[in-house]
Structure formats: structure tokens, C-alpha cells
Length: 356
Image (cartoon, rainbow, N blue to C red; front, side, top):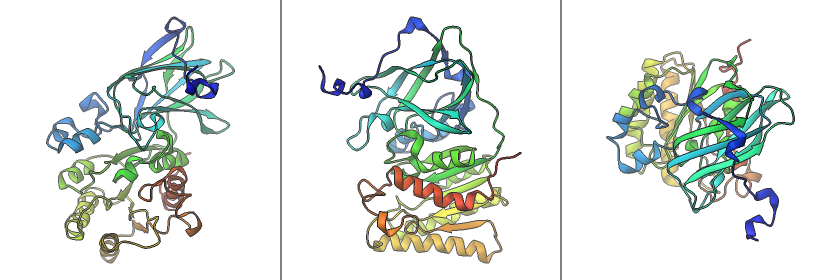
């Protein structure tokens, strides 16, 4: 017996292909990819633009944080077969977040975790089945894509004779756009469904667009202008983690915001400084936080009533700042992301409400 099979709860089962009808994700509702019609894949910015970036940024753009496939089915069992262009196996996260898909089912008035489809270590494809329902009623599902791996294509299998269709139309038509570092990207969430943007999206029952670029959030003007072309109802700006100097940050932070504000004068903006887990704020982070405050205050002084500032230190109570909020004093863990989402929700809720 293999060690990982000692506990049957950790065993994954390959799909018995002849028991399922498989449907490609393109038949269903795709959210979180504003450039999908142009790219025809999961790259989060237009491919011609991405090709001008550094190799690191090109790789990061191929991850799929926040991307979700929404659908309805009456199938009792479900299978997923995925092919990757590249599958990440990191030393700090698990296959659940690096390459796994989180399945959420609408039940008792909310979307709840059903299970996680994930590949095995060393496997280049994902092939897994699970039971998702005890009856043949139609249920809505959301399937969140992996945080880091590059998904080429995937099919969802349902019981033969069952129905699968696009997800129910959202009552809330509003969208939240996020721009930020690895924190916004989702490191170190244990699953794709537990990043703070995704948590906030479920709290408010709305679509999110996650443009968090792990290690590569530098406030480039070209990205700001492309983002300004999008349609969104709230902008969360967590830019600050990756700036190497205060001088560079000062030269890029307010100009980035002004590009967004010029195109979207009536959209609320929430500035967030770096989440802080240590006892003290480092000198460079203190300087960067001051720049964020200046961008915010300059907007307020100019008469902007739709800007808000969240101090990254204030998101975590002192009693849970260390062990309870972070795995390595740099990124939030699941509890830390929940605290972030809860803090942002207090501001976002008045702007992003479910339309009756």
C-alpha cells in the first residue's frame, strides 16, 4: 500500500470514461477573463501585450486566479479531465492551489465547497471523479481554476443522460477589478476558492477580475491604460509589495490611479497597503505606505469622494497577526485572506449590492 492511500479520504479516483458524457468548458459560462474573446485561452491580458513583457511576467499572466466556470447540472457524479501547458509543483503550496480546481455548489442560499479536483504529483494531466449530489435536482456550480498552473483545455463529465447548461444569470451584474501583487494573485491560499478577491466575490455575489501578478506588480502605464478600457464597478488597488524603492513607487502609484480615474470618474477605488505581519513596519514599507496615503489624500483634496484607504497593518488583530494569519510572514494564509475580504467588504458592500 502506498503511504498516501492509508487514509481513503486522501485518495483521488480516475474517471471511468464510459460512464460519463463529457462537455468542454467553452459550452458554459466563463467569468473573470475580460480578454478571453480576444485570446481564446486563459491568459489574463491580451497576448500581444503579454509578449512584450519580461519572461517572468509572461509566465505569471498564464495563471488563472479568479477565473471561474459557472454551470448547472442535475448529475449526481462529476468528472474533470484537464490538460496543462505547464503544471506547477511548488515547494510552498500544494497541488490543491497550484494546479487544482475548486468546485462550489449552490445549496441553502449560498455557494459552498463541494470538493477540489487536483492532479497527483508528477502527473501532467488531471483525471478525477467525485460524487456531487444525492439527488437528480438541478444545482448551480462554480468551478475555480488553478492559481498558478497553465490550463490548456478541460472537459467536465456528467452522468450519461444528465443535463449540463450555462450557469444561472447573476442578479448582481456588477464587477470588481483587482490589481496587485502575489497577495492579490492568491499566495498562499490553500485552494483557488480562498483568495481574498474570490472570497469577496462570493460575499457580494458578483463577478471579479483578478489582475494580481505575483512578483510582477510594478504599476506599468501600459497595464493601467489597458485596465482603464474595462467595464467594472469597483477598483481595488493593492500595488506596493513589489516596488523595490520608494522613489520608483512614488513615480508610478499616483499616475496609475489617475489613468484609471480619468476613464472611470464614478467608480469607487480602494487603496490597500501591504499586509503586515511583523511587530514593526520596515522603513521601505513605511515609505511606500506614505506614498499610498498621499495618493489617497491628494484625491480627497481634489474633491474625490469615492476613494478609500485600508492600512495593511489594521486588517489583522494583534492576537492573530503572526501564526494565525500567515505561513511565512510575507503572504496571508486562508484566515488572513478571510480577514482581508472581511475588511474590504465593509467598504465594498455599499457599492456592490445584489440587484433585486
